[in-house]
Image (cartoon, rainbow, N blue to C red; front, side, top):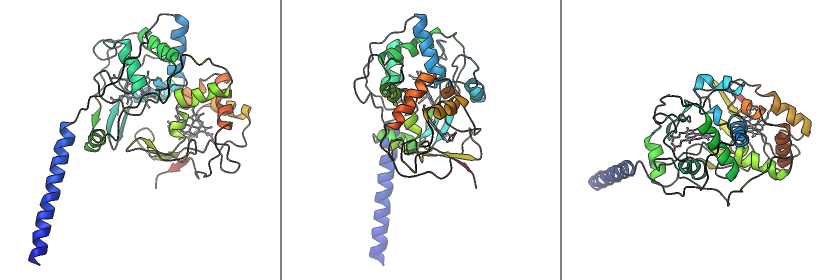
Length: 325
Ligand code: HEC
Ligand code: HEC
């Protein structure tokens, strides 16, 4: 009996020491600074380029659905044109993440950011201050030209002073970063210089993967590590109820051409284009319907054609809208 008590005492003590050392390690390594190159991409005042940047920001790249105050999100999706003053906030296990002001105000916005710092944030997920930009913004494979267009648009906005609270990490979040489980990633291949918009599968793939992040939601994801755990475009990613969607959870449908399980196998190109153009049906759905409905018909056709080329994945998420309880 005594021996057992001794072992428990020392074993318990050992565990305490391990926990203590780990806690100190995690707190000391926060905030972790990462290295990444500054892309040689510069803002321009060319009006066509600024227009393309604005189209991307309010349309397929949907910067505008996060970088505006939460009470303006739906109005922006419905067409309200306003500067990207920041304000969207999301609390998940790794912390509370607040989307900052992206107008050229030097104190509360990006007025003090260089073009290289903005381009690096998009392409390498490293913030101006060297810390990680968590995986909310899957723009690492954007073309040079589209990065240039977006930066040019951001710089063309009026400067608006609007303070957004800083992002804060929970212990879990700090631990994931300290252990290297949450870290910045760069482009998966050398990014293209320019991908011209047309109805080709190649452009559809570019929009679906590198701009609109369709696969990011339509593939099962582990919300703690930010890693994909399901088949590409197989759906089934459950987005629990949060302040944006009180009382409702949403599950993404399978967008692959699986003959029985694919959600859109019976949709022809026209049906697909019409559905995307029609926008939101389910109030509170996390899909950026408003932004996606602003995509051109050419772009939507390209996405449809790309989806047809995917590997069919079995599995049919039962309902895409779940009521809590
Ligand atoms: C799903 C929501 C979401 C979308 C979409 C989004 N962002 Fe963000 N963005 C965030 C959040 C959240 C942060 C703050 C993260 C943090 O502080 O750790 C952020 C931070 C940033 C930063 C700050 C980097 C720094 O150095 O401080 C820039 C620049 C930025 N976003 C640009 C963009 C652009 C441009 C787009 C569209 C092409 C975009 N974002 C789309 C949520 C989003
Ligand atoms: C932020 C997450 C998110 C992103 C990004 C996203 N979706 Fe969705 N999508 C959802 C969710 C959740 C649903 C189910 C609820 C709904 O229909 O609104 C859905 C539903 C759909 C549907 C079925 C609609 C219906 O009426 O049956 C289609 C088609 C679709 N998405 C295509 C796309 C395409 C194409 C893209 C990229 C341009 C995309 N999604 C990007 C989350 C997302």
